[in-house]
Length: 284
Image (cartoon, rainbow, N blue to C red):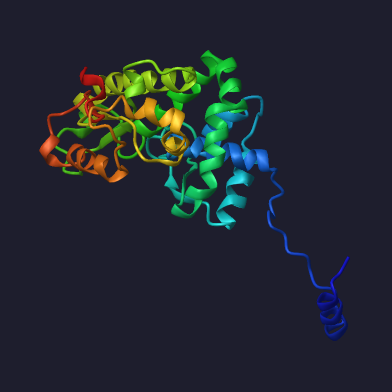
């Protein structure tokens, strides 16, 4: 029913005031929340990669793509460019590979929105659904990370990079100390992070002669939306803070130095390595 102000405005203009559409692409909250959950965990992903993790029964990514567009309208996600697309010169017989897709990430404005969604995803139905997915989920995670590792300026062959003066491709994958140890009630997350570490080492071997360096970072407990509930609930806080020998959580900016080092010429001979920054948790 129209309010008095709306009726007055309509009478003055002679035309009905159009309704404000919050989500013009018609997505459901479950689709948007699952998209936020995946981006909160993977940091960057395409619509197809998100679909394969949370909607593996679908045959196209339209629902997730629309969810991303609705979230973008509200400033919660932003596109970070595109995947490389098919390899080889346009028109050449050997040109092959998937079409380029937009890469998406969360924005700073989405952190408050993501916190409760990520909490539900880790402890609730999404985690149980992922656990039931088993091998399919593990393969989807591996494929997602592989797409990032092999993206960018990867040469078509080791010989193609000989004498090349372009900048050295490098990748730093986000693993976790959960890829080195086991954590209770987090089997899908632990399995995925073990997969990230294994994939990092395999990719480093595959692409070393092409001049591509691939390393992984394994943070310990860090102040993020995903861990906020653990750090604020007294029962869990005592448990999680007992792990790091510094008895505190790391700040996100404390991971920056290692990433900058691995991305710099100073680490030109470092590849296939895992760099643990956990406040001493795995040292004992």
